[in-house]
Length: 288
Image 1 (tube, rainbow, N blue to C red):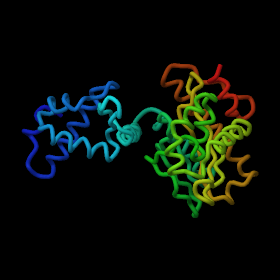
Image 2 (image 1 turned 180 degrees about the vertical axis):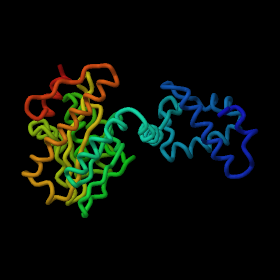
Image 3 (image 1 turned 120 degrees about the vertical axis):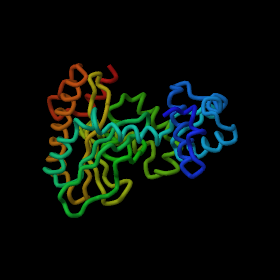
Image 4 (image 1 turned 180 degrees about the horizontal axis):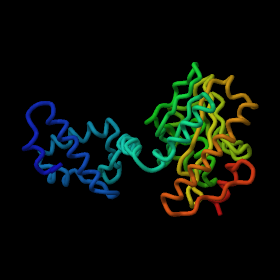
């Protein structure tokens, strides 16, 4: 799209606003990490300043753009990142995970998920339905929650070193208190410790009573978490005995996916743990 000609090409109908929003979104994206100034956007879009400001406010309001409170520059917003992440289904970790997610859903009968970290949040990339007739419908592809909320998200948090865990808890403090008050920092610290001890993350229906989740982290060649595989089920299908069945399945698929990722990147996969690849060892590897 030639964004400099957008005002001339767009008609006077409702498509004009859409074209302008797309043009400004692309301009901000091309500005890179430094962000874009309002004056630059006005210049390159060839639009009146009030019009540009009005469209930018709408994009910010809907999460497609973000405005830095200090510099007042515009940056790509969280919802745009989620859309881009979902678009990666044709390649990368999403495409490589599909067979494993299908096996997990088939063998467990429950829903299997792939999540990836985005700074202090986790984004669900894919949900694979199982055959069990009573299904939980809590996490959907594109959903975004703070790290620690849910089985896969907790696995991602626990695989980070302690200093990063504290950073996440600090940065997410406001949104956690406002939207997830049942997840106190103390509870999340305990959950991280239990995850590392156990070797897998467990969400015992804290967010939605009766909806449980179990997850393991995916590690990159550098030992850092790049994703998580998880299974969600009703409480009666995640008893301690069944956890001992599902956890090895998740860990096996995680090792296979890590190996596939290493082949595509040309880097060595992290060595598998001797006994169930505990998250504690993953976190120690990151710290070392």
